[in-house]
Amino acid sequence: MEIWDIMNENGEITGKTAIRGRTCLKPGEYHLVVHIWIVSSKGDFLLQRRSESRRLMPGEWAATGGSAISGENSEVAAKRELYEELGIIGNDDNMRFMGRLKRRNSFLDVWFVRCDEKAEDLKLQKSEVAEVKWVSPSTLKKMIEQKKFHNYGREYFKAVFSYCDNVFQEKI
Image (cartoon, rainbow, N blue to C red; front, top):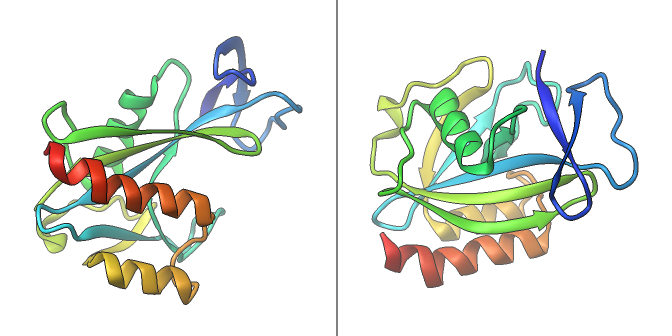
């Protein structure tokens, strides 16, 4: 059973919790979700295809991530998801916070991680991740256009590519 902290419209924890899949968030209630974009020193993206057994987005290529569990802040949740799903250790040397997006019933915090491990050397959480692959930014853009990658929205992708091009590549 996964328990989430409920946040208000300002991203503040309210002291209330929700049980994943059992609690419907009311208008003005949010939970915290993290996305982690893994980028190589060459600028390629590590993508993951979700397991076919997943209830949400089965078999889709998507960003690494998930919901924060009760008591976790964004960074802790991002590090946990990164390690659980791919076996990659996130730390202050290889992680950067892009920012927070407000969605329908969640706050989505986006992180970037520098990693140069080979896809075949990663330890995939098979219940969550079917496969991974490295792709160039142009290939990722084509996958998005061809609907072969989950559609997080135009503004989301604009922010991700802009951050990667202008900030992330320079800082790590």
